[in-house]
Amino acid sequence: MSTTRKLAFLVGAIAVSTLAAWYRWPDSAHAIGVVKRGGGTARHPVALRGGQDSYVVVPTAPVIPPWRGDARVAVEGEPPMAWELEVSRPVVDLGLRRWPVQDGNRIRGLQPRDRLALWVKLTPPPADPVCGMACGEDAVRHAVAGREECFCSEACWEAIRAEPGRHPPRRVDRGKWALTLRDDASGAPLLTVPIVLGGEEAGHEAPHH
Image (cartoon, rainbow, N blue to C red; front, side, top):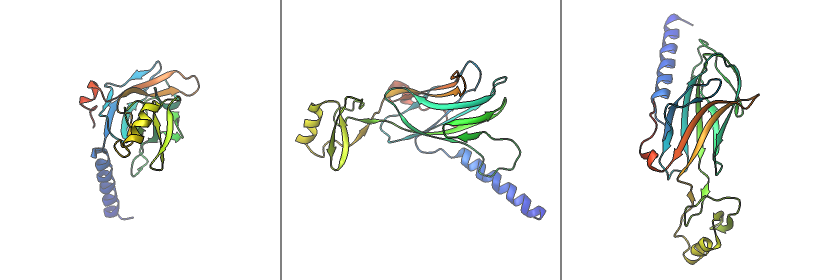
């Protein structure tokens, strides 16, 4: 490959990577913390406005010596929150540094001074379409317009039956969870990112860089 083509490829790679870092994904928030023995905490909680079907949280953190090993990622709290994880890698890998290896919800072979960037898609749990309460194990479930909906009580189910179509499907729009990284071998905390959905804390989102 000629020098001109190599230079053009490098400039293009930098431009794409910069654009990917600059772009703010819809309904997303960024959290900054550290991964360390004994547990690090994000600089600010992630505050999300309620009312969306899903959110993207992007925690970034360096690994502080002397800890090294495998980390397990989870979203902890009640009611359980559905989530998906992707460990960020460069759009174009120029081979200038090592990158963490994702294995499902685990990150393998982390070393001191590695830097993590996680993309975590959060999907709030379903809620009663009438009153908005979270659907627990004791929820009443019925088919509405061909789909299963949950209700906190038979009274809310009767309200739907009395006025079909008035109450669209809902998801939980407030609550507190935590995105956690734990040592895969011992379960000891490495990083905790508090997540607040709705409420006064969600008047502004965590800074996004």
